[in-house]
Image 1 (cartoon, helix red, strand yellow):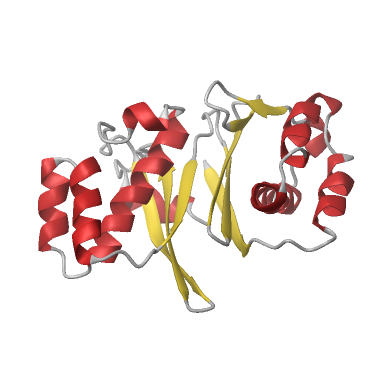
Image 2 (cartoon, rainbow, N blue to C red; image 1 turned 90 degrees about the vertical axis):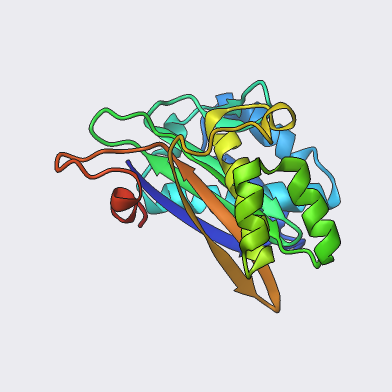
Length: 224
């Protein structure tokens, strides 16, 4: 499986709606519900969803995917998905930043991916620890408390959870604390722009190549 991803600032430009409508013409009419859901949103929610979609649209074009053959709808948790085992995508946005990851299966694999991005809010040390205790397991909390960079540890754990939940198609409210983050691999980092930090994670299934390498050792071969 190979993946590609892109991020941008969320904009409320006057041409945003027109860009979505124009791109919509390249998709299967069955995707109407997906586009109606985006276009029916108002103000900030529309801008976030529209920018996320335009990132996806750009990645599909870049990777030579025929958009007219895609069927995009929503699952039971209202997550957009493609009805094609060979393609998956995940979109996340947070306070001015949008992130989209596209996964394309190879050699008969099933494409799976989830992503999350979070603006690094300026929590007090007490508030961050309170939140960490609410969702981290004991082992994770122990590592967090020993960390010299509390923000990186906190938002790293937060985004890995959300990314995994999206990839697995789970209910975020019922699964946030109890997910098994050993199931698969993650690529995490920080987007720094205009004086802001945005932490992100990308969740991928575990892999093993013909040489017996697995997980992180093969992650660099997957990330483009």
